[in-house]
Length: 117
Image (cartoon, rainbow, N blue to C red; front, side):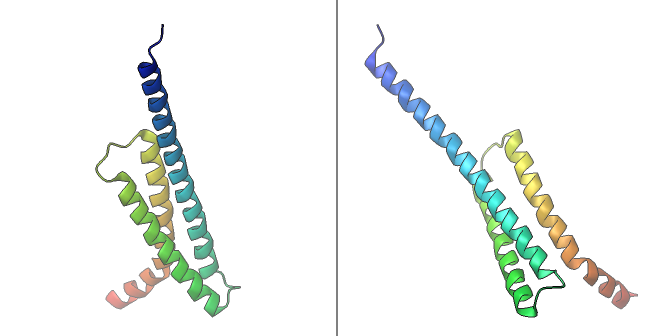
């Protein structure tokens, strides 16, 4: 005969585990959504078809989303051992942010190169 207390604890443990996995999925979904918004704002800010006002607004939105992404990654991963999937997700987000940073500053490199030499 199954003990009610054991069954109740098993169900509670299962629900806690299920809720934790849903939180991780929601967090990953939030990161992906913010990253997509960040890429879209970056594309608008660098589009030759954008007006100056739209480009400035998109640049500010891109910077805000970049900061939010970095803050969310720091908060989510602070002080815990990460799984392979979490590490892969972090590398993917950081590589996209780095790619945008390089594109943003690529033209400035030429200017600083000319100033230094």
